[in-house]
Image (cartoon, rainbow over all chains, first blue to last red):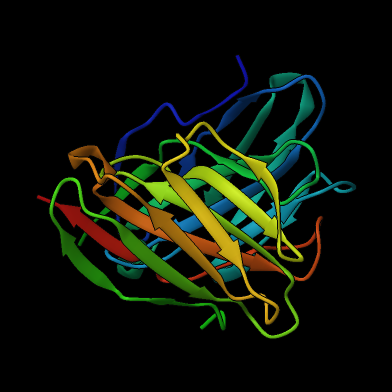
Length: 113
Length: 112
């Protein structure tokens, strides 16, 4: 079945530490790929997206993600997290280039001071 | 701020009632998509409107319906509310198919 998998429901890192959030998708073709962030009670903010080209994508707030076709993965990374990065992160795909986005279940990021 | 506004921000309804949620899309955007986000879950696609016509639907029953108006604002209507309809409802607008979608802050619906 077509799906987006975020295997980590919760992740806790110390402020200043590096971060990697995992995402895998299962679709025949390469979809458009996204990472969104959601703070409590808020809507979704787009961090970055991959449509084609360079497989390392830079986003806002110092985040980056790498598309690996062979692994069907699109992991999100940040070299040094800040307390303000505590939020829910959603990996998402757009399969048919039609703005209909399929989301993973999210990873809740906790930051230790 | 994305320029996508939703109203109301919160509301409480009783099981069996009907509800209408509203979304004003960003200026120049002609496509609106609606999503339901249950607690602890990712958003799920409900349906999309493009130039006032439904343009795709997710796995939701017919009691979920929508409209898009000539100014491209949109409504989501839910009839015969059930407890499981309690969720954050998000709308997203885009300027045309195949461009970035911008999300509103959502409407938190509680069904009691």
